[in-house]
Length: 230
Image (tube, rainbow, N blue to C red; front, side, top):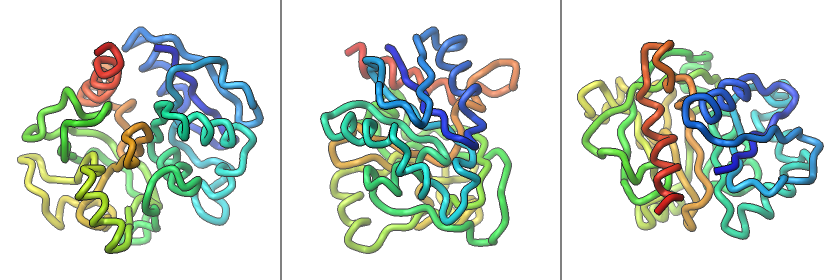
């Protein structure tokens, strides 16, 4: 696949994402600057983590109006694969491409640590090769990661199987203690109804290299590649 990684002023996980896609997963990658309007015929777009525009106002609220985002929205609306991680997830919610919102963490503190997540379904590009009974250890690093959606939206998320991951303990149990930010129903990632736009707060690119002592994130990237091969 040919991936486009969008880079905003303040992005700081773009090179991590590019390294994993190119060096670990062996894919072609192009860098898309926030002022670009040409997607360079990519097959998929990834919005990496960071602090776009310094996270002023709300995280992702300014990046949503970058010139590149108009093209990303068009791409998504025509069925293109779009994946946002952490700040990328926030931007996709701000752009209306994903339901819900990311609020300040419940404890009002920045949280950076390894956590465990469990796939909630196996019928999406991100999760189709994952075992829903097996946990993944993936790092988080955010101050505004508390996922929130109103009651009507939650009903739709359940009905359409749009919940990708939930925070859990090492044994896979979904508990309050395993929720690092207060996200409603321990939700760590969601997709849109058409299942072509995805967002998650944990950083799989930070758990995809043997040098880091953790390769759990590789399974998510491999799931994406396998999905498009089929």
